Length: 140
Image (cartoon, rainbow, N blue to C red; front, side, top):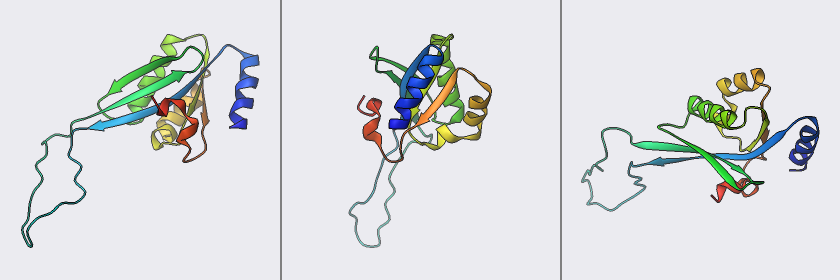
């Protein structure tokens, strides 16, 4: 966490900076059946929708203003995460966006790395693995 604080301080001196804590949540209507009771040798089928019905919500929390920016997507993948990043950039086109986030595979995908390499308005600061307690948007 000390590395993140020092990165924020150094970037803040260079240009106008917005810092966000970012995370995503996935919601599904599919049943989650782990175990159950049934007669011996009887096969039961758990009925579920024919199509996967799920949503992903990406969120960014600005601790300074206490505002939350979000985007809903049908699925949580690199493309929808990049669309969320562009939405954030449209809200603050003249500022450097520093995102503090976890190590989710979406955040480390080839597409997202390519975007980071070519955009001067975006930087990531990853949190330590398995440390959701450091990300305040987790509670949101």
